[in-house]
Image (cartoon, rainbow, N blue to C red; front, top):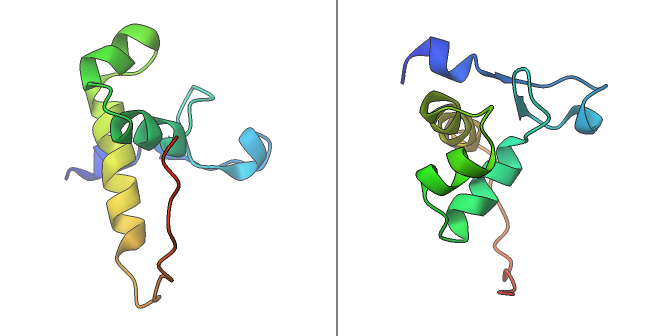
Length: 82
């Protein structure tokens, strides 16, 4: 993943309480990942949120992947399906 792509994500305490968002938007990485997990296509997300690009969606995924690469052991908990 190109560094420029990951650089599309920022965290600012004054925007969404510091949640990582796509720069220039109030669209969080969390929101994008939830939409993808719910089965929405990239095209669906882009049509619903025209300020996003394919690169910004890739950046959200890359950001999440990079932040999961650590020595931290994540407890497994059941996620309820709605």
